[in-house]
Every structure is written in C-alpha cells, then in structure tokens.
Length: 631
Ligand code: AMP
Image (cartoon, rainbow, N blue to C red):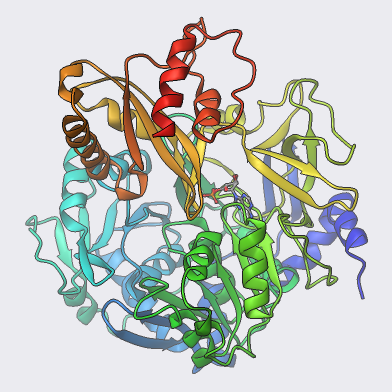
C-alpha cells in the first residue's frame, strides 16, 4: 500500500519521474521529449515534443478491446429518451460530425463554439472538434445573448453548433433566437451555424449560414475521418469563466497534460475502472461536464451517463434508478443537488439497489456538514468532497482513496492532491502559514500540474496578471479562495477573496451582473453581492440607486421595476445570473475614495458584523442596506 504523504511528496519533488509514469496511461503517437518544460514561468509546457489526440484516447483506442460496450448513455427524463452508444457507435458518430466540420471548412486550430443542451450530439460535437485538432468552446445553455456574444467575439469561432431547444421541467427552452441575437450583437460572424433540430421549438433560419445536422449527417454516414495527431501542448478547448471584471476569461486547456491528469485522477481519486459506468450529473457547459462527463470516463474506458432533466422528475429516485440500472460505480454531483434531494422523501434512497456504487463525489461549492452527514448516512457510501476550479480542470484538494484510503472530515474537501504544491499564504505578509487553524489565501507553487490552464485565451498577460501576480513579491498561483488547514493537513474553504459568487455550484461574477443591471435605463449605480442561501449556497442580491426614484415610490412600483430589471438580466446573461432580489437605495456604501464596500454589504445582508468601517464615506448608506436586508 502506498503512503499518500510519500506519493504527494514525490509528485512535487520528483515531478518529472512521477508524471512520466502517469503519462503511460495514454496512447502516444509520438513520445514526449520532456515531461515538464518550465523554462518560462509561470507558463508550463507539459510533455513537450510529444504528439497525441484527445479523441483517440477517449474513443478510438477502446474500440478494439471494448467496441461493443457502452460508451455514452443518454438519458432524458424531459423527452423520455434513453439511448446507449457503444464505443464503436460513438466513434462512427464522432467521425460523421468531424466530416461535417471539414465540409464546413473547419481546420486544425479553428474554434468551434458549442451552445447546446445535454444531448448526445453535444458530446459528438466536442469529440469531433478535438479529433481534427479544432478547439471547442462550450457555452452553457443557460447563458443568454450578451454572454454568448462576448464569448463569440473572444473565441472567434469558424462555426457554431447549436440546437433548437433544451427542456427543463417539461417545458422547452428555445436556444436559437438567443444565438441569432448573440451573432447579431457580436462583431465576429461565424460562417455557419450547424443546427440539431430536436423538433422541440420552431426557429428562424438564416439562408447560407444555418445548416441542418441531420441532412449533412446522412451524407457522411460512412466517412472515415482519422484523428489528427497534435502536439501535446496544442489547445484542446477554451472554457469561459467569470472573474472580477465583466469580461469572461477563456481558460485554455492543452491536449496531453489534460488527458494525463484526467486518466490519473480516474485511478487515484475517483477509482473508476474500465468497463464500468460513471455518472456525473453536471452539464457540459461547466468544467465538471468537460472533465467528468466527457473526457475522464471515456479516456478511462468507462461508460458515461449524460442526463438531461431534473433530479426530482419524474420523482426524486430517478438518479438512483439509473445507478441501479447501469450499475454505476462512480457518481459525481454538486452539494446543491443533494440539498434538493434532502427535501424529498428519504424512501427514494432505499428503493433501489445501489450496491454497485463505490462512492459519491461532490464538488463545485462548499459542502456543508448537515448535507454531507445526511447523504453519507442515507447512502451508506463514502462521500468525497473535492475542491477545484474551471482553471485547474481537476481536483486541487481531495481524499485520494485510490492511493491510500483515508477518512473524510465533514466540512473539508481533504488534503492537497498529488501534483499540487498547495500553500496557505498570509494576505498581508505573503508568507506561508504553517500554523494550524490560521486563515490564508490558498495558493499553488508553480508549475501547476498537468491539466491546468495553459493561459487565458489570446491574453498571456492577463493570465500572468490575474493568477500569478496577486501574492506580493511571489510568483504563485492564487485560487482566490480563503482557507485554513488543520494539524492533519486537511483544508477547509472559507469563501472567495474576490467578487466571484457561487450560486448552486454555478460560478458568477458580480461585476457581470452589475453591468447588465446598469444597462437598465433607470439604474444609476448598482452593487451585487452574494448572500448565503440554505438551498443554493449563495444567491445574488442587488442594491440599485435609481435615476428616477418616483418609479419605485410605492411597493407595487418597486416590485414591477424589480421584475423589469430581472428580465434584463435574463435576456442578457441568462436566468442563472438573475438576482434573487433587487432592492432600491438612495446611496451605496463606499469608502471615501469611492470603492464599493461589497464585503460590508454582504456581511450585513447575512447578519454578520461588517468589520472595520472607518474608511466609509456615509454610514447611513450601510444602514439602508441593513434595513432592506432585514425585510
Ligand atoms: P468553478 O470554476 O465554477 O468550478 O468554481 C470554482 C470555485 O468554486 C472555487 O474557487 C471555490 O470557490 C468553489 N468550490 C469548488 N469546489 C468547492 C468545494 N469542494 N468546496 C468549497 N468550495 C468549492
């Protein structure tokens, strides 16, 4: 049995030897020359000189051994569809999609933007892109036209792949009009839009630009599209995430480092074996969907379940029924989903045979102790909290039970994962904190392990400035999370150091929401903060100063204006970003130098002490917030 402390130490101190061993989990077209080239910090080139292909590792190489076994299991409780694709069938579908891309002129290095619901074609679309060396950028289907337009302008895709609609709670959620609006708002115009028509919603077609997937697929049924061998460092995808500015950051992932990191994590963290079934309840629009619905399980030769629907429909037993039916061994979800299930009849957890399940992994937001305890007892299986970010692509903190089984501690996502030299840093002195229980910023010493972001798409400077320059005098990666460590090396997360909030596991930038609200003609100024919420972890609450206060003079008028503002956010960013409430104030709490006191606003909203307010311009402003928050 390996000792985890030794395993971790070796991963950092004998980095190249350690990762060279993990790299054996992949198929290499050409072996790498160097494990990690860190000659230009903080930019790390993993497996430089090597050549491989992500799609080959996820699909083609499994066909000989397990071609007839399930690879992708699509379940929609919205359209009542269930369809499994074997590795051989998946390979055929991906080649058809890749052939369509080529017929539309997509070449190696071109971007393919994917704006789709949770349907198999979305999986084909991702794999087809990396198959031909194109770079995909999946935009979460819950985002609306402005969010989409800014991503189109940044990624400059050659084509966009989309669908007529998604479905949620039995209602169709049309996509195409939002996409049309986004393209008209964007400066960059993709040459084609490839439409998967599910027959759920009518949509307008733009002649010469919009093309039909089903029609083109018929023409490519038997087309063979070989995998394009790309350099290890060739970008595989861009995934946008929110930060402190309104402009989303394009997290750029490489090819080989990512594949090695995922393959290793399946072994050491998730403990999934080839031939088994993995079920992640996330969405392909998020990083968990990329790493653990699509790439991780498939690279590991596992079947993966892609689920469209709610956890409670037709009833709260639906996920467990899938665990029974497909003999799921590894399940991955988010604390919010567990909190939703906790409100339902506990009978659903005992109704199905869950003996195949080895563990439930939860990530994306803090896992509170009552939720963790409830699910651990109800399920009778290990619950493994794991902490990571869109930027890293795989866990920074977890219990690596695949290396050495260890107990979890409620409220802690565990210890530093192998490959990450995690340190707690004192915010003021920038010194490492070694004392147990003392709060600091969670940071990682460079180089980041394989799989983490290479850079910010098209903006190396932003990458360095954002992530590697916030710790005074040190070149260290900042996670922008506060944490503490106990005497056993277990970390506890204490929230973000920046203006990023986490609503039901969805990461949102308060600045983006503020910009959207400010576009309402009656809003002079606005502050958005994240406020603790029992179900969603956090919700966004907005405090707005109006140009014309008469428009909110009565409670009825204020309600109507609040609804109007929410509609603006829905249309521009999407319902996921909609604040839970918009409250009207005459002035916002600021420092004398004009800086918004967000943390003080957040504290009073949560009934906490706002801390030192000596720099505050107008104490009455915070009182207004406090009065409104109490209502
Ligand atoms: P995202 O990039 O959307 O995955 O969001 C990453 C952020 O979510 C992190 O920086 C944390 O603030 C939070 N987060 C993710 N996983 C956890 C976890 N297991 N415990 C606490 N916070 C988490």
